[in-house]
Amino acid sequence: MDSNVSEIKSVNDLTNIMEDFENALNHHYDKIDELEDTIDEKDEKIQKLESNIKDKDKTI
Image 1 (tube, rainbow, N blue to C red):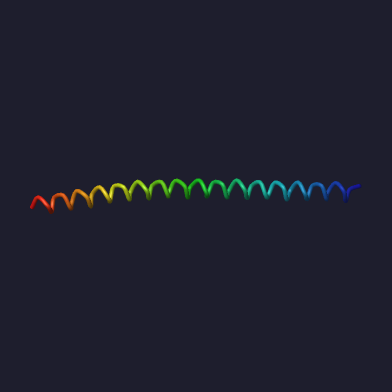
Image 2: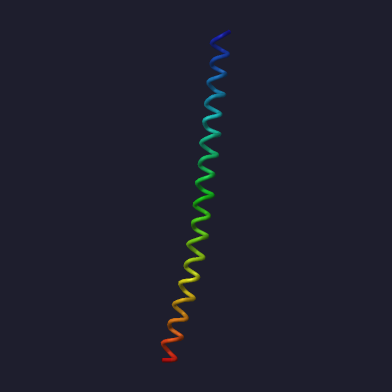
């Protein structure tokens, strides 16, 4: 009986580890999404600046 209880406990422990891993992985995916959004925002700003530079070059 004790071996069955410890076996079930091992499965529960493994389940908990897998859940923790999944949560950590999701956290990292969320951070990646945030970084991608930041990169997109910076790219937009760069494009606007480049456009402004080209416009100013035309007026000079």
